[in-house]
Length: 179
Image (cartoon, rainbow, N blue to C red):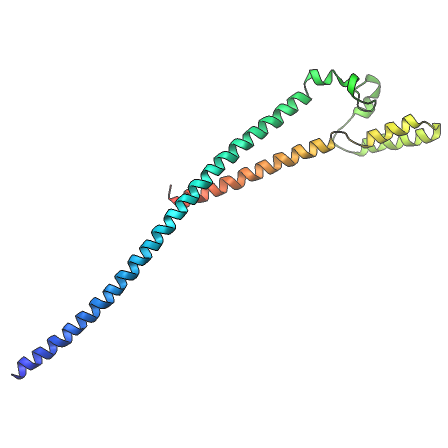
C-alpha cells in the first residue's frame, strides 16, 4: 500500500508538472502566433510601401529623363545657327558678335577680363563724356546668360542628386524585399 501511495504521489507530481509545462507551452504558442500575425502585417505593409516607392521612382526617372532631354534641346536650340543668325536683329551692341569686338567676346571662364574691360569703358566713358560707352560698360558687367546658366546647372545638379537618392532608396527596398 505504501508503494501504491508513493506511486500515486509521484504520478500526481508528474501530472502537475506536465500540466504546468503544457500551460506554459500554450502561452508560448499564443505569443508566437501573435508575433507571427504582427510580422506578417509588417511584411505586407513593407511590400506595399516598396511597390509604391518603386512606381514613384520609375515616374521620377521618366520625368528626369524628359527634363534632361528638354535641357539638351534648349542648349541645342540656343547654339544652333538659326538662332545665332538673328543676333544682329535682336541683341544689343554689347551682345553682338562682331569682328571688331574680339576683346569683349573673350571668355576663358574668368571674370577678370570682363571686369577690366568694364573699368576701361567706364573710365573712357567718363573721360569722353559718352553715355553710350557707360551703357556698354553696364551691359558688359551684366552677363545676360549668367542666370540661365546657373539655373541649368542647378537643375542638372538637383536631378543628379534626386537620381542618386532614388537609386539608394530602390537598393534599400530591393535589399529589404530580399531580391
